[in-house]
Image 1 (cartoon, rainbow, N blue to C red):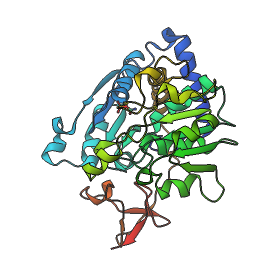
Image 2 (cartoon, protein in one colour):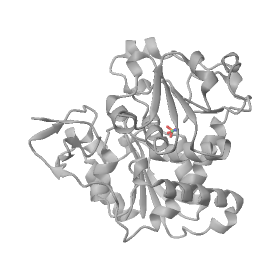
Image 3 (cartoon, rainbow, N blue to C red):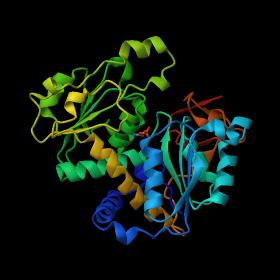
Image 4 (cartoon, helix red, strand yellow):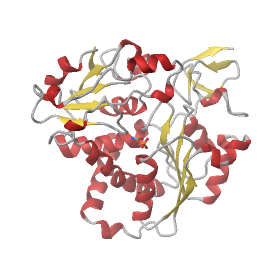
Length: 353
Ligand code: CP
């Protein structure tokens, strides 16, 4: 049984195949109308969502399946103290596939360890958001026609932006991709992401604080929201929240072939006057999310008997994860699993207790 926890759970060939199936669904929706008849998707959203939850719901309904779930932790037995892993054990009994979003990093891996059905990570804290990346990738393929030889600017909250971390992981696997990381000092890309995908010549990148300087070289401009909900210090959020605002005037020196993407929701970071520019693709990007999630559901429902390729890790009770947002610090009874000193749940370093 396969899960989608991290975009690297899928090979580039598997991603190509998902994009191809999504394209076929767009062209021939009637062919897919009943293919999930009798199947149930559980949508467990412990954090707010518009696009991800509703596009998963729409995807399963468009395949002829049904959906159950909750859209906030308060309306589930989490409010009574039930653990994530017990919740998943239960929902595994009521559904054929689960999409879950959780504020704690590593929660979907913890879920997949006890689930008896495929688990899809629909966003875990500031860690990863692989189905957003599938949405980003299908948009890039349809707009730029390729993944190789692209200069990708990523602007805004690179520290807490989980969509950023998954997109870098995915795009770093293609040939001659260059990243331009545009962020204020306080919101730079975390070291664990940089070391894993960019450092030691893995992939070319530059860091800058200037959006204006970066724009002329870009093939893709991926704008992101400053993630208010992840800041411990609200004054710091207030100071940084309007660090970048993309206005039409800033696109004067951009390539005519530029694609402007955003995982959405946006707050102030893209002015509405950009929406009518032919290079603004973010609403179409969100719409494509429905079709790529349809292709994903079909793929994962067809993986019984096929092993998940993720590392299992080793239990080490002498180590503790250093990431204060990791589920392994708060979930009762969870095994403390590490791989080469890194926490298996959230990829951050462990330390001796
Ligand atoms: N892009 C994204 O994850 O949007 P939602 O938070 O609305 O699901």
